[in-house]
Image (cartoon, rainbow, N blue to C red; front, side):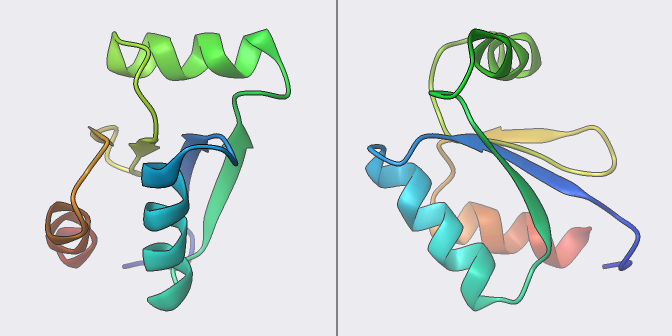
Length: 82
């Protein structure tokens, strides 16, 4: 993955799946921008606009694709392909 590529993760601290995905990204040493949907309605609206549903985490990749509530396996597979 290119260092200039930015991954954005929309999530919330109370969300178990968000914490799991953050731990995986951190453990893999992946640089990403974290957007807390609890901080502002705009952040929550952005996540909803990307995924079309209220579920989090929403992880957006540099190619414009995204994953919603990914399993660790699905996230690792996507990271390997980016």
